[in-house]
Length: 250
Image (cartoon, rainbow, N blue to C red):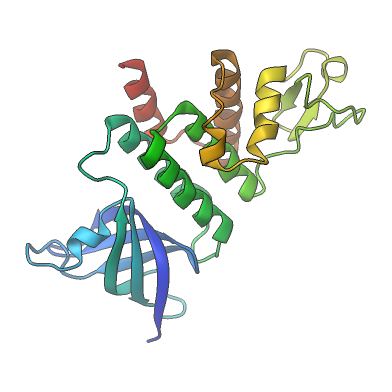
């Protein structure tokens, strides 16, 4: 059975037997991987601490062709993003990022750009806090890197540039319409939100966090990203509801 090495972020865990777990990783080299970690629930396990969710690790695992589950051989911690100083907002946001990645990435399909986005977003959130700007950035870019975010820069009917004036999003056809062509149909995205979306396309998450969104623009982008995620995933993510509850109770 071949042994593979990968740089990985732990997405989630499941109990298997009394001492074993199934661990789901987003790897840079192989995309999403599921593997069994033998004996990690035992108190003296050397790997148990390395395989906690949101850990950035170096991973060695066995995998047999045609098998859904691999088997972890070794894991080495690079960095934990849920340390002792992590705030509740960071915990909720980072777990939300992990659920998006888990749902949107196909098993065993390399997705190098999403891996880099995830890691850059965790680093930005650790340094500056889990701001609304970072959350919206991760949502939009996760969609874009998987071909699920339409080109909203131009009206799909008349070709007019709508980046500066805003647009109406048509979800069924994955198109943008200008005010005239929309005839009032679709989700209205105003000028400020449209400009913020354009800025996301050219900035890193850390850079985008330096320009706070106004409340109306943030709300419009949130509605857009949630409609797109729900449309493509066909469900609302559980961690998003937890994140919303946390924000509402602050």
